[in-house]
Length: 91
Image (cartoon, rainbow, N blue to C red; front, side):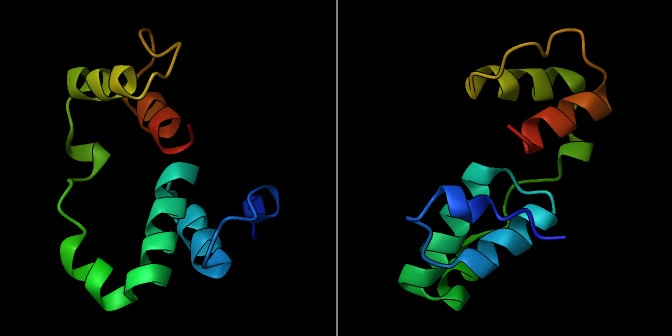
């Protein structure tokens, strides 16, 4: 089911791709960044340079907490791993 987050952000250059990425679990920021880059540079070029980060499931709890801190997310210190992952993906 589409979220229609793009109605709140008219600067999205590829709203369909944005919605697909959000449905796959990407954060709003990541989905916007990827969809706009693909619209500007082409999907193939963006796809060639992307995909280097590992899955959050492969990260340790400490690494996840460090990432949450980097992103300025609050309320993560007592969360379990699956809750941290959810918070990171949906910030």
